[in-house]
Image (tube, rainbow, N blue to C red):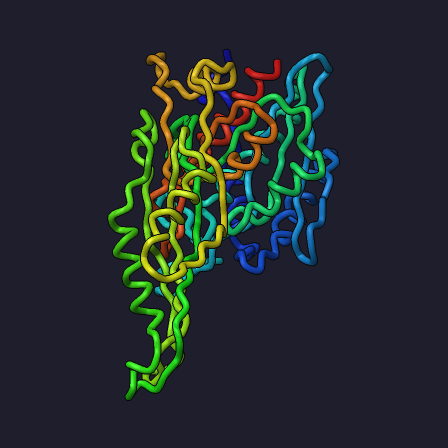
Length: 384
């Protein structure tokens, strides 16, 4: 059984590739992920490994690279996304596209979420190719666009059959070096109340949509998500995170919108949950429009699946017992892949989830180098 610690990595090459990826700005929206896929494509082609670019729209593309085995083995996918969230308005000490090095950290938007995981996967594929490691099955690197907004790239892979016939998937999202086998789903709802405009000096002549929304929010605060706690994920959650309404200070508003973020656990059906929300709001005495913005199911994998057992053994250090798998509060492209492909999924990445989407986002370089070793060792163990 290969151990992650046994894989030899060139730190200089690894840091240079990650820095190049971070400097390739790919904020979503609008995306521009082809800046990242193009540089990765060039890297693979310099090493003689052909790639496929699947263009989704101008400036946006998925990438697939395949290290072919001798035949007769399973197919393992290493999955990462190329887009990032915007840098935000808060000041950064280290510029979001700087890829600054300070101590053992590399800074920049996407350094944690998840260009470090993606770059580590790329290098793992190249290391196995350079060493000529005999593999029976195929190792596939799948870089997807659009994960941060609507999983556009993952959905395209499924719709076009780009990942058909695979046997297991490893997603490189930040887990702090832990092996995760479950994550929450997401149901995002937009609620709209409608009223009637009137002069602000004569509010009795109108119907204030903001006040109607206040009653909606009060009802939602007493709404309980119908699910038991999951052993790895805990309770399902709900958070009301945006509210928009009004035209000007002297006009009674005739429309108000609020957006609700529900994070779900296995066993909680999204269609049923949507019906429950509609039912809870149905007796307020006025109509409330409910629109589904995103519905991504929760994910869980059997802890005894071969890829999970191997991942736990590969990550073990100093001969200690394999660490227990964990669950994640956020969702990943696996919420698209697993329901469609019915395959086990492991999530493992070098970043710390607590710094995702934050100013001065960073990744610890020792964890990044360890991730390269992990992906290479797991692929060798699973495919040999």
